[in-house]
Image 1 (cartoon, rainbow, N blue to C red):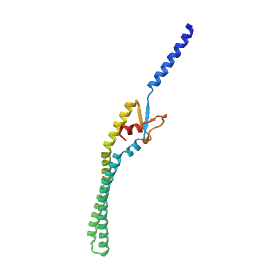
Image 2 (cartoon, rainbow, N blue to C red; image 1 turned 90 degrees about the vertical axis):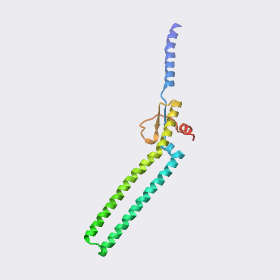
Image 3 (tube, rainbow, N blue to C red; image 1 turned 135 degrees about the vertical axis):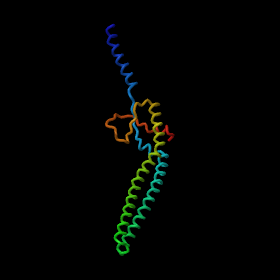
Image 4 (cartoon, one colour; image 1 turned 135 degrees about the horizontal axis):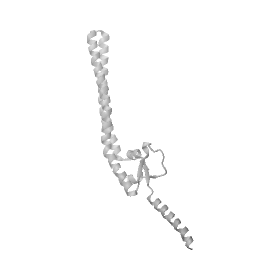
Length: 172
């Protein structure tokens, strides 16, 4: 009888250790942040504001380009009709070159301005999502939550998709 207890004790110890490990195993989750971001009404509002802003810059670019084209056409017409001297023609060409460079500079700045404005509009939305993700992770015991939209995952076992929990935390 003492012998069977000696065999039973290691088995109980092994079973308890396995149960403890199962209870303390790290918990991982995943979600598609890009899809979540696009599903939020705040993102649609931000995108609408960004489009309006970009359209204003595009209108200014179109105006500058139209003015350049008109000046170029006028120069070409006056040059072909012989109204301009060679010196006047060179001066006007130099002015057109400066005008064209200014347009190119504006286009580059406009792209940077749109990107900066987008970041500014999305910053509070991303902060709100970040807070919700951290709350879901804490409340549900997740060690890590991965963003599947970034494509950074090299390997992953099946994990829990926490998008629904984050949406619930956001009140959606």
